[in-house]
Length: 211
Image (tube, rainbow, N blue to C red; front, side, top):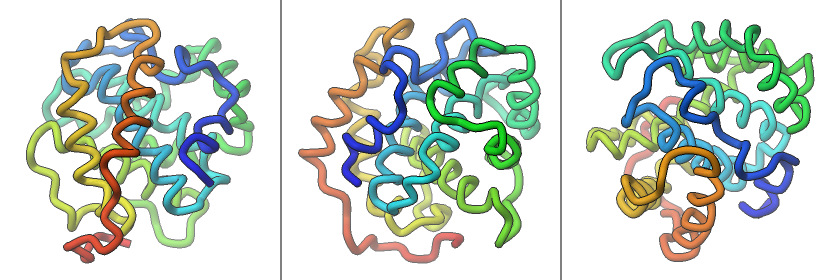
């Protein structure tokens, strides 16, 4: 499936695909709305590259939630579980997820992925294992903003081929797009433009990522 088709499979307006700034517990430059928006771009690209199309609504929801409950930019190992707990207090977000194709039976896997994205790994063979790996790689690709992304920690070979793209997406949009309502709608055209300019590596230099 093409990148455009993956995006189109979530019937939600671009303006609503990522959380507004006031939904974050901690207002962070490093882990706030622009970060989540870039992670969503990487998530859509990973779906297109891996063909795991059935994960699209669940992965979108997991990306949306994953950093909402951070309380700092430092070590915060429980923030994924805390973000999941916050969902119970956000009926509008629950309605948004339903609009985007998230079903009640998807919630356990989303909970596990969001809770594990900042600590530990999903057990192989569990229903949440594939979703967790996708979320961790999409989030991991945006570590280019810290300059410490280690390809060996990316779980999919497709992700290891996307590092140059992640660097360009961050470098050409950070501090250049106004944060707030409609942020993803402003980022998405830039993401598509760069996707045409920066081809993914088909044979990444590293192949030791955790599968």
